[in-house]
Every structure is written in C-alpha cells, then in structure tokens.
Length: 114
Image (cartoon, rainbow, N blue to C red; front, side, top):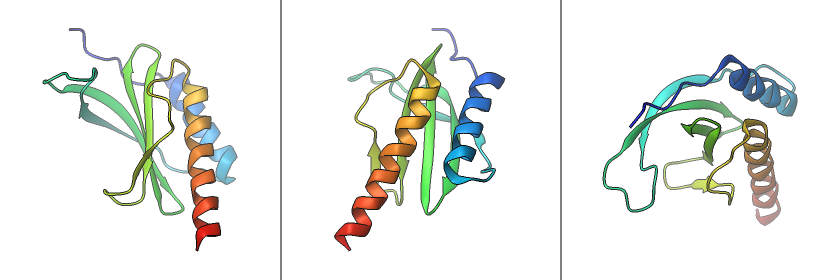
C-alpha cells in the first residue's frame, strides 16, 4: 500500500484561511501523524497525516486518508468526540466548512441547553 501523501500547501492554505475567516484571527494549525483504520473491519492501522487546531475549548482534527480524501472530527474531552455525520470528504474546503459549522451548531445548542 502506498503511503498517504502529506497535506499540500494548497490544502493547508484552505484550512488556515477558512479557520481564520471563522474566528477572525490566525489560529495555529499543527501537523501530525495519526493511526486509524481506513476501512471498517480492518485490523491493521494506517498512518495518516493530520491537521490539528484548538479554539474556544474545542479541538479539531482533519485526517487525510488518501489523495483528496479527508475525515474530520472535533472534541472537548476524550469522551466527548463528535463527527460531522459524513464519513469521508473529497473536497478539503467542504470538510473544513462542515466541521466548523457542526461545531458552532453544537456549541450554540449546548448554550441553549444550559
């Protein structure tokens, strides 16, 4: 199996500029590697590049699972992990926008429930 390519400069620019637009400031985006199961039922883990940032008490992760393939989630604590409802994206812009919108909706709902 071919290694999964790292994020391109264009992908990183899309992530950073979308996050900046959402929060009105530069938010540091860190790069890391993570191990995930690429397919349901897979026994082995695959090393994938990930982009990570924190803002407003939330932690965000986008994992690149292949060429033009992404997964996204956010969390507050390890037992409070949330996805977007979409298993995989083929457009990084859609991935980032949906992730930020789902988290904003979740935060707004949490404030209403308090």
